[in-house]
Amino acid sequence: AQSVAQPEDQVNVAEGNPLTVKCTYSVSGNPYLFWYVQYPNRGLQFLLKYITGDNLVKGSYGFEAEFNKSQTSFHLKKPSALVSDSALYFCAVRDMNPQIYNQGGKLIFGQGTELSVKP
Amino acid sequence: GAVVSQHPSRVICKSGTSVKIECRSLDFQATTMFWYRQFPKKSLMLMATSNEGSKATYEQGVEKDKFLINHASLTLSTLTVTSAHPEDSSFYICSARERLARDTQYFGPGTRLTVL
Picture 1 (spheres, rainbow over the protein chains, first blue to last red):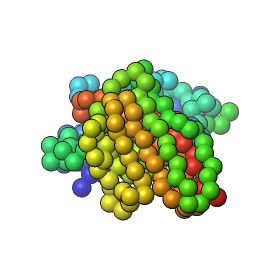
Picture 2 (cartoon, rainbow over the protein chains, first blue to last red):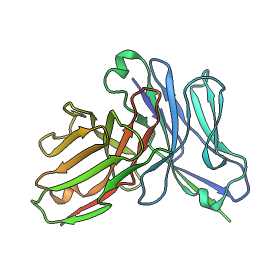
Picture 3 (cartoon, chains in turn red, orange):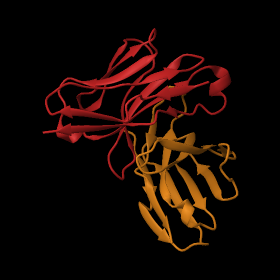
Picture 4 (cartoon, rainbow over the protein chains, first blue to last red):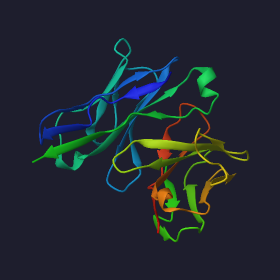
């Protein structure tokens, strides 16, 4: 079964420190992986994606994520956190197994991690 | 970048009335659009997937006669909540994707529905 897990409901970081938001996934085929950010009462904004190629993916606002196939993980990272990074972060996967994809190619979302960056 | 708009951003209605929410892809053609529902500080619940020109595919447990979805063109999808009740109050978010599977799914800003 396809699934995405974000093991931390909340991550607290001091401004200027590095941050990591964890994500692990389970799919039957090759995964397409995404990170989105949501600010209060807003829709989701795309941060970055992994399709193929280099395992380290760079995205918007200084974020990056590392695809680790052996650990089935796609953790989101940023070297130096800003207060304005405080938001809800979602990891998502699209299973590219044709049997799954032909059901609509829908994204499976993790439960979300609330990031709080304090000054 | 790709932009998805939603209208209205906020709507308050009386119980028993119907509400229509529009979702538009502004700078790309969306062959597939998705409708989600989100409860406070919770993940998104996929309600249905719609492909342009065909009937929407609803997720298990979602009443298709209550949540009417129309995807009439490559840039417009609508969600109509029929005979709304207070338990339908929620944040509804649409999303759109271009033709290819590898394409990113872009999200609208959401519509806050409150049913009195």
